[in-house]
Amino acid sequence: MRVGWIRGGGVWLISALAGAALAGCVLMDRTPTTVVWTLEDVRALKLVDVVVEPGSFMDRAALKVEIDPALQARILEGSAATRTSLALVPGDFRDGTIEVEVAAEPNGRGGPDARGFAGLAFRVSEDATTYEAIYLRMTNGRLVQPAPPAPRIDRAIQYVSHPEWTFERFRETAPGAYERGANIAPRRWTRLRIEVEGMTARAYVDDQPTAVLTVLDLRRGGDATGAVGLFVDSGTTAWFRELKVRRAD
Figure 1 (cartoon, rainbow, N blue to C red):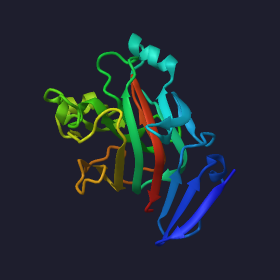
Figure 2 (cartoon, rainbow, N blue to C red):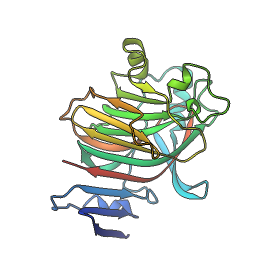
Figure 3 (cartoon, rainbow, N blue to C red):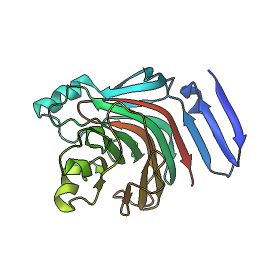
Figure 4 (cartoon, helix red, strand yellow):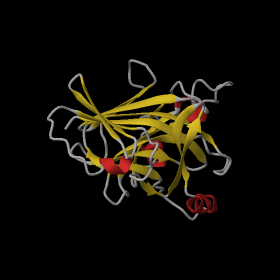
C-alpha cells in the first residue's frame, strides 16, 4: 500500500493509491483538506447495489461502475422503486467541493429511457438510504449531434434528494427548477464539480466559469453530513477518475 502526502498552497493533497490505508488516517491540520482518490484500488469503497471494475477508458485509468445486474433486472421488471446505486468513499462531508472526471453512456440494459446517468452523491446517510445527488444525462447534452429534441436538451443535469425527492417529483412540483442544459455528450470525458455550502449547491461542467445548475434549498438541510460517492442509474456504464473531495468544515 502506498499513500503519498503532498503539501502545497495551504492544502493537503492525499493520493490514495491504496484506499484501504486511507480510512485510518486522521489529519489534525486546520486548513481545508483535499482527498484525491485515483480509484485504482477499490478495497476502501462501500458498494451499494453497484459493481465496479478498475480499468481504463479512452486511454485513461478509470473505474468502471454499473448497477448490480440483479437490481437492473428488477428495475426492468418494475419491481424496484427508488434506487440507491452508489460507490462510497470513507469520510464525512458537509460543506466543500467535490470534483470528478466522468464519462458514461447507455449500455442497452436499461430500456428506452436510459440516458447515460452518472454523477456525484454527497451527504449520504450511514445506511445509504438518504442522500443528495447531482448527475448528468449524457445523451441529453448540447454536444450530442443531432441535438436531442426539446425539452431533453434542457434536461442534461439534474439534482435529486433520495428517497423522497426523485426527479419525477421535482419535475411534477417545480418543472425545470432542478434540471438544466449542459455541454456534455456520451463517451466523452467531462469534469463535474459541485460546490456545497449550507443549503446551496452549485454544479460546474468542465472549465465553464458559471454554474450550470444552482440549488438553493438542499432537501437534507444545511447541517446534514455524510459520505461522498459515485452515482450511476439504470442502463448506464460509467467511468470515473480522479475523485477530489475538499472539505471546508
